[in-house]
Length: 310
Image (cartoon, one colour):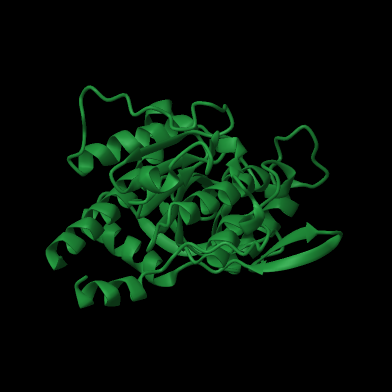
């Protein structure tokens, strides 16, 4: 072996799991992916993965893998990019080259389940130096609709940078910091593209789409328009640019597993001006495509850089 390979391997960053019970499992069944260590050669299937993109919608993640395949010149006109998780209807997974695209559903519980199994999958596949990015949609606060927000830090509905989970009846608090260098790299890619406005700011992660986000149009509402405006303005003053429902647990779990992580969400509306979407389906489709374009630019740039230095 080339001595340089030893140096490169020693510097590579593995995907970590922190569960001593896993070693006692004969087979690790990734139930919600319909995959497992006893039924699939995960290293052969996923060992080359360097970039993982996750998003709520199965349709959106299939759209992304088609887009990135074309961007990386890996597109096969005859390929339908089959769903690797076709044995289950919980999540969808697609792969092209070193890029994995996975849906995570809506809300903290759904993405948490997916991330547990995704992190174990990457660990079993012995992947190293993996970058993971959540791409999605959000409600903006004081931003023009269509603005892309790269999250600096995920905060809860009280504007604090933490994720709380009850384990064995006790509340466990976890850090929600994201990779700041990665955020800056994504912002630089947006500047180079010069196609749409992109900002770095804090993202509020809520447990609900309606009351939890101060909407006035849910089945229940116990507050006034003024109450809503006061709350959202306080959020904005705290550096919060947008609201969604997955970033806190995403940041916490990626940090624990050693994954370089970012959240990139487009704003579909300015919540200070309303609660319901009024843009046409064509405009909304364009907005939803923007995180894909930005992350696609980043991945392409990273791969070109690696090729140039190899």
